[in-house]
Amino acid sequence: APAQTWRDVDAPGARRDSAPVDVRLEYTRGEVQTRPAPTDSLLYDFHVRYDAARTRPVVGFDSAERRLALGTRAREDVPRSGDGGSGGEAVVELGRGNPFVLSAHLAVATSTFDLGGLAIRGFSLDATAGEARIRFDSANVSMMDELEIDATAATVQASRLGNAKAARIRISARAATA
Image 1 (cartoon, rainbow, N blue to C red):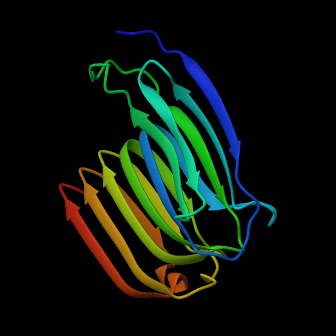
Image 2 (cartoon, one colour):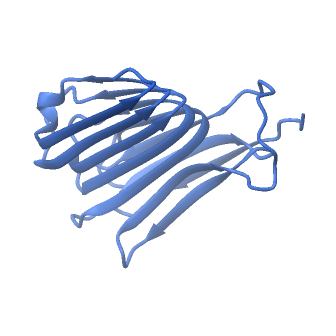
């Protein structure tokens, strides 16, 4: 088994504005938290600690397309194994001033989404072989078109979904609990 090689990336985002942003969170192997930023000055703040022997960080913002990509991705040049090495950890903080469409793709990850107080226009979660918790402890600032959860061999807990203000909620679970 390859030795673990830990790296840290801190990526404070652009200054916030009021234009909508599509956020794609992709996270493999570890723990990730998504929550409101403590201040309103930045569009996002991202910190990740990852095993460079197994994964690589994903950080990118296309200002013209208004797309933000964050997370980690499994390295293609490393064979996948179940050798029990520990996973990394990440924190994604989103600014309260921008409307977001948040799409999260998680594999072998434990995640917490504290989305109350943000302006989430759409939310989709694709979780495979992990655990996810989704909370709206306070009301979504905007109306949400759709909240979609797709779980495969995963456990998903969602609470206070009335605060999400979603026009539609769709949940799909295969060999999973939701």
